[in-house]
Length: 210
Image (cartoon, rainbow, N blue to C red; front, top):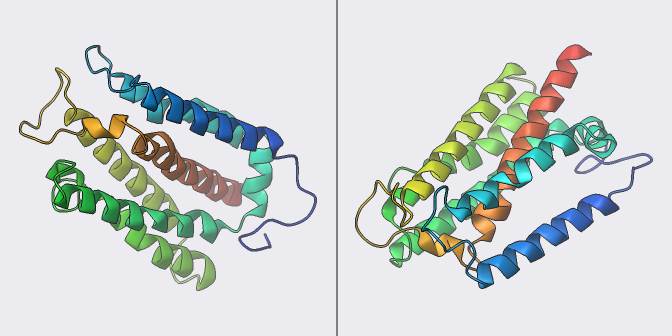
């Protein structure tokens, strides 16, 4: 694997990927501005569509020609390093909590420990793939841990929304996540996080087969 962050050689077309991403971002913006995701009267809440609709697309993409190209040409440490973006996300959530916009359980002061995934990203990627001082299975454990932390915070968010399933009473609720521009947290950043985990796990499995 070569390049920085790891792309080299003849690349397959990424046009379809860029188009799907742009279309999804536009659709999220339009629907959130129209109040589509803010309807919490039905179960499951419409907010569930934001993080879940991209999942089957990501799984299919990971098995496509372009996805396989990325798996084989992106340096594996970069799939881990990029998870450090979650530090900024958690700082943003903490700021929203401090300003009374979101409930405390969605920050690291409450029940959200996702910041640990971001803090571990650089050390794990470096020690496993650059220094090679940690075994390769550390990457699998890291990705499983990251996915579990993601499930945890998404679950807490949904249980904090104004639906019959709400388990965290008091104000504020987490309904603001259904509005623009915060809809991009569940609709873009959550899928980005689990996509990096999925690709990293596939890279790890491919390396084991070689």
